[in-house]
Image 1 (tube, rainbow, N blue to C red):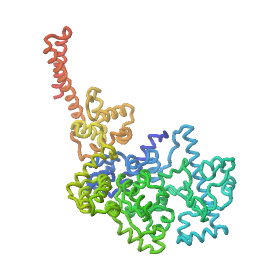
Image 2 (cartoon, one colour):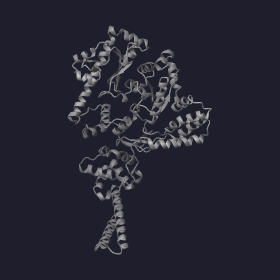
Image 3 (cartoon, rainbow, N blue to C red):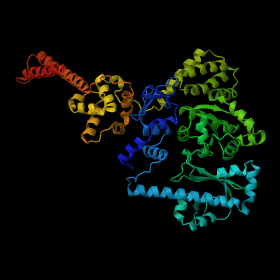
Length: 591
């Protein structure tokens, strides 16, 4: 794994204002020494999410999640540590140091960088071909589809001429090797060994990362008998179809500003919706929506309006996408269009304003599914009602909020002409069955023992380690390994002692190295004041608890020996009594 120097991580977090970073995602209000807002990791109406600028950490008292600024980016944007570091460094203008990489990692990094350059060069070449006289027919086709030249330029549209290897020759002339062009998916090697362009006689549509870097292409056939109609790049080291959302690079700012995204199916659906003024739009690249795409989108919003084709395939995809998005924590609406019209054709025929009204009138996904399933069954017959409920109960069971689930039960009961109590019972039963087979993913929780099992003395020490490290570290020197036995905070206090011994302790480094325990630490550190203000008294209390436990254990052994009637070895009982007396003296000394 590539590693960044610890000094760089420390400097980065020092320069990165955690309030500014989290403020991009959460509306924060200053309350005393901290900032408070609604937690982005679970639904809540009363703010329980706290950010401490001075100490550089966040903590939610509602769901228990917590950590530093990098942990926030990892959790919220669903990225790895290295990507979080790169993102934060870019945000605050800090140059990344050279990574410690193996030869294999360096080779992989170099290859990916070259593949990105190849795709940028290919995109530029395709645009050049579109602008040439031979591209006039394609420009006319784009115009006939209602896509303006300005929109086409924003989308980076291009043209792949019908020649067998025109792109291959152009890119080789630019210095790229044929093996790398094959690796990029731009060339295809036939069974006889000849190498030709993958995309020929096609309208070319660049597919980009959210940063704008071109990573793949979609090619639309230009002749009626040309198959397939759409040809996409294969999977490559820089492109994964199931993890990519088309148009996100153009839409992400509008999505964040508006707080929602419109999701469509095809490239031209995207083009028309984007051109109509609804710029918060993405497309699923012509595939069924995947969990990875949903997680990717959640970096920017948790609200989606689905605008799929009204045919059976499109509505089936909408139903599956609804369930997928809800499972990933999204609030979902569905915009329906007249039969035979997709967003592309609807906007061309009815106009942007009419499409905007369709979006405004979109239904919550449960109502949409309710209407869709009800339309397929005769609800005036017992058989139809049974089939209707059989389809809807599993859907209702997936609703995460119990109150919303009960309200939906009322709607189901009304539609099916049955009592609401029966429906509620069936939904609860289905929900329980689902939980046993499909457990919901949980946010990182507190340490294994949790705050409930932590003594005031432990909380006092941990609070002071973050807010008054000098006194806490001095007191930690007095703790022996046996003093930590059985403590919920053992791993944290052990780590703090080791960091001090290596002269590496700081609150930031403690959080960095704590990993799973970070929410446990931030949960304590976020409290307004320490449970015990004197670090030395915290240590004395932990020692008292240790000696009390040991006295009880020795007394238990004494009782066992006395019940036997005779000690197991000569002098054993006297030794136990002596040990007990010594422990009592230590306890008295701590009084």
